[in-house]
Length: 473
Ligand SMILES: [Zn+2]
Image (cartoon, rainbow, N blue to C red; front, side, top):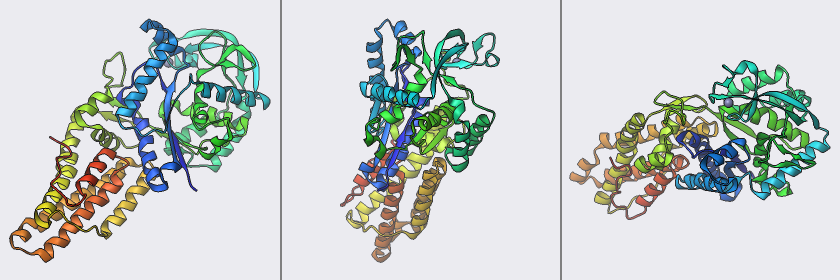
């Protein structure tokens, strides 16, 4: 039986979610809903969660004046609740401070050690806590990380290293054998180019830090947060218990800033312990807000719950998928959201549903017969192909071509004239076709706009009554 499992990045708990964080999670949600429909609910696993063992957590807790575990619990709960309120259909919300994760990490690290891939050495270099990574001197501007605008710290310590360089050839071989492994293609090219230039071993522990998961054979070191975090993709599906195999390998949806971790370090770690790399890594672009980068200091980070309250979960989903072609960067503005809301949702789909339900009630006592619409079949297949290939904007454009077609059919045939002239033999088949078209649209729309699909299905349960506006103006 075919199965599908999908993950989102896990999110740092040093801040509350903003609309930018939501994007990868929504992509995973659309995929999970689509595959559940296709394969059955039990055949799909969708996990998200929080990355808590970071130095950023320590700093944020200190700043908030709270004890670190209490702070972490509070923030993780906010993330989980936000995703729930936004209707994200995750099967698991994993936190990296949970015992099940810690157990998986310890087991995994021991396996890496048994493969002879961990050794002790010294590391010194510039470290950016914002990145939770060492930086090259050439990446710094006036001693600061330009992306986080914070001064890099010079770290010099005894570390354990992972022999990443050992996997250079295996990785290149893997990329060559799996040309669709990273989407979009531009990211695939970036990653393969990077590996071709040669890989260095990486430090995987921190001696100076206390917060984190201790290294099993030398607890005076904690495991580097990224190494621990990547393993969440296995701990969520039950690793080290063998049952993890039913959901592995999974599809990882990530943002473009964390490609190297997911496409180079993670598969190499998996090769080290003899586990197959993820099924695919799906990399989304970023979006700006009114043309500006989303940042706390600019104060332009939008609370997704505020937007959802104003426009509805589904309108927000529709906008993000329609407006931003997957893989590219895009821009978010409430103005554009409003335009789409009025034109595509209220005047397009909303109007169609209201017209058809109204006419079925008035002219056919609320009764219609679902029939096969041949034009829809071809378009719906196109929607699904686009969705499976992460071309979400194209999928929605096709769905909206069906909406426009159906509205046009009403305008052209003017069913109200047929009713006035009492042409029942023409009117009934037309209403059957219109109702069928709306239901076809709904079936392919569901992964993108689950709440709306539910409302439409309810509105078309017979006898049909004129539906309440789906998208009130
Ligand atoms: Zn940084």
